[in-house]
Amino acid sequence: MDYRFECQRCLYCCSKEPGYVFLSKSEIEDLSNLLGLGETEFIDIYCRKVDYGFYYLVSLKEKDNFDCIFLTDNGCRVYEKRPLQCRTYPFWKGIADSKEAWEKEMESCPGIGKGRLYSNKEVHEIMKSGNSEPYIIFKKS
Image 1 (cartoon, rainbow, N blue to C red):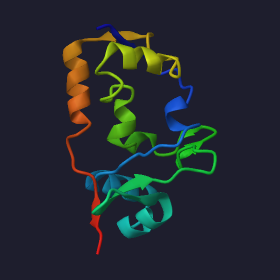
Image 2: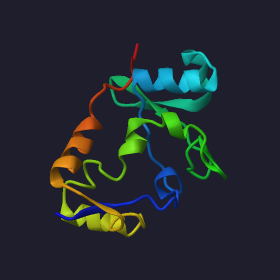
Image 3: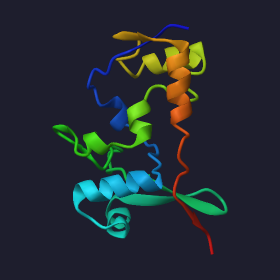
């Protein structure tokens, strides 16, 4: 398959639709440090718990218009420490693992089909890296 992508800074992946940006322990540490907050304070201010049956996962909050909590008029407030999920878009399972899904995502993301060509091996490595750390889990009591 032909994987071309170059971010066009349209902010589609950061806004306009509801979704989840699940965080790992190290991402919470990095973001907390960047913002000068303790981890608990960071979670209380910027995160929400997402119910997954027997446990909760931690996701970034969204604004009322579904924009990421860190999206500003100047772009991502935490860009240098943005979560892996953000860094690997659009090379996600469910998007990059089929031609049909990739072409469907192209309708929303103007960067797909532009820029450099990624090899199948590169794309699969990126998709695999998206699952490298476990997400923070809060067990229900």
